[in-house]
Structures are given as structure tokens and as C-alpha cells.
Length: 413
Ligand code: C6P
Image (cartoon, rainbow, N blue to C red; front, side, top):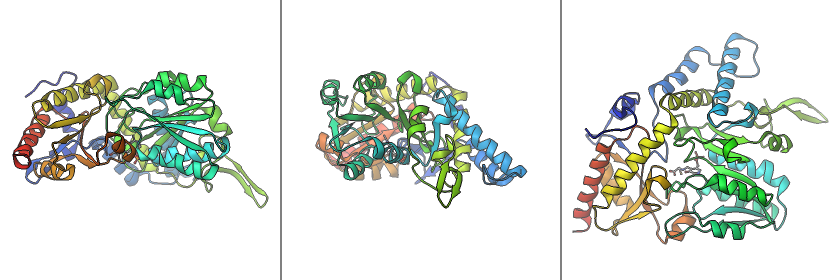
């Protein structure tokens, strides 16, 4: 057994029922955490309990079940607010996920604040969810989208950012951590640079919030978007954080039930924050599950999770250097990245490699990872990606490395 330095990873694994599964007769090795994470028993039970014991709609009923459901839903909001260190609970808006959060900003803020010829500054390492909403905005407003370059090491080119950050930029929007390269971007520094030019700053936290301590007040970001399903919570729930003064000025995104104070034939008035942005029946079970996931993460400690993942990542990078013909994309220093290793092995197609890994019970992702402009920058169609979380072990990495060596013998004799 290889030493796990920061906590008893084998004990943690016991909390995740799926990790006992076999795939093609082999123990499951789940290295597709950047796509979605597995769920601990506690989260599964919290969702089950809601449906079994107090399923009801929220904010509407006066009956006991409705009261209990409303309380649990709003308690989840408090947990999220504390987790990201928001100043006010009203700054936490429940949405379906990162994608919806960014679309909300593009519509409810962008449509009213970005004019023809003005710019949204993103980067070459963005996920499509932080590209396409800005293209749609530019179709509506005749605004522009500009991409900050990345260096050959896969880091953000800060000099290029400085050059492109002119008075036409209304918003700088970027991934805290790239879902392909793993690169952790210096968000505190970029926040300052953006504000100096009177631009707002949006952080796509899909790949950082689950793995690092993210403090919105410390970063001083105007918006933060993230997804529950990548941080041990269920799918269909995510968060848009935004500074209260910005949310107060913005218009609603969707209209309907629960977001209104009153509706008449002459028009309507909106509820106060945060409900102004939560039209329709929310994903109540999802929010409760996310709240439980946060409690679980905090019971281990985000600092320890980060250290464990750094350890696994640097061990993987070290062992991958044993293999000839491996090309790794992104920084090869675990301090500069989250637990994501994207690579190609000779000219083996990533889908063939992922299929071979699957036969050994190893789940990875192969493809463009919803980051096609980055693939174009790297001049490749696709990569294979291994991504880690708090329950992964070095033994699993060893099996992964042996399988890569096997693939090399089969495909590159
Ligand atoms: N990336 C991956 O395998 P949603 O789908 O809304 O929960 O998250 C979108 C998203 C936004 N930004 C970043 C940086 C992301 O990594 C993702 C999701 C997954 O890389 C699924 S494509």
C-alpha cells in the first residue's frame, strides 16, 4: 500500500458505494472526475430522505412538509455562501450548473451592459460554456469576443491579457482551472487588472471550486459559476455567485412563478434577492444534495483535498515520464495545476486508448473536452484525459501506467 499523506484515503473510499463496483471484471478506477464526480453515501441518503420524508414545494406552502423543505433548501444556500465566503447569502443563486450560470450573466447582465463594439475578454483555454454564451451575446449586441493567448507551457499569457484589456472590455471571463490543461490561473491578480480597467470579472469555477479553497471576497470576483455534480453533489444543480450590488441592478433571467412579488394586468414586480433569479420550482433535492456534499468536503478539509490531489498528480506526471512517446499538455508541475492530466500516446487515437483503458476498468475521457479552440491552439483534434479527486490512490495510478505501457506495446510495437 503506497502511503497517502494527508488523510486515510482507504477510509474515504468506503464512503463511496460505487467505488466497490467492478467494470469488465476489474475494480473500477474512476479517473473521469473533471466530467463528473462520484457521490458519497451521505449525499445519496440526503436526497433519498428528502423524497421519502419531506418532499414538498418550497416558498409556497404553509404546511409542515413545505416548511421543512424550504428550510432545508435555504440551509443549503447558507452552506454554499459560507463555503465560498460570500458576504451575503442573497449572493448565491441556484441554477442548473456552470453553463446556466454563465448564460444567466450573458443575458441578464450582458444584454443591458454591453454595447456594439464593446468586448468580452476570454482565453484560449476556455470550455465552450464560457465561449458560446459570449458569441450569442455578440450576435444580439454586435459586441466582440477576444481570446487571450496561452503560452506553450499551457499557462495564461499575462502580457497578452494586459495588451487586450483595453477600455472596450466590459467583462473578463475565464476558467479558474482549465478542464484540459489543469492550469490554475492567477485569478486574484486578473481580478485586480480587470477592475483597474473598469471591467467586471467572472470566474468559471467548474474545475476549481470542487478542489481548492475558493474565496470570492479574497479574489474579489464579480461573478463565480460552478456545478454541484463535479463536487460530490447531484447533477442539475449549480451556483451563480454575484456581488449583491450587481444582482440588484440586473434584470431577471427567466420569468415565472416564485420570482415575483406581484403580477397584475399592468405588469409585475420581482421578489427580492436571491429569488428574483430563481423562476419556477427549483431543484430542491439537488440543492439539499449539494449542501450535504459541501458538509462532506468540509469534514475532510479543502486544504487536505488539494494536497492529496497534488500528490497524486505529481506521482502520475513522474510515472508518465517512464513512458516513451507520451506528450502531456499543460504544466508538468503539480503546483501549477489541478488534478488533471491530458495527454497523447504516440499517434494512438484517444478513443482507442480510452477503450483499452476501459477494458481494464479505468474510466477516462477522450475527445476535445468541449474546448475546441484550445485543441486548435494545441494543433490536435483530441486528447486522453485522466482527472483525479479525493478518493483516488497511487495504486490506481500504477494500474493506469501499466495499462498505458500495454497500449504502447499493442499499438506502437
Ligand atoms: N466540463 C468536462 O468533462 P456544466 O456542464 O454546466 O456542469 O459545466 C460546464 C463546464 C464549464 N466550465 C468548465 C471549465 C468545465 O470543465 C465544464 C464541464 C466537463 O470537462 C463536461 S464537458
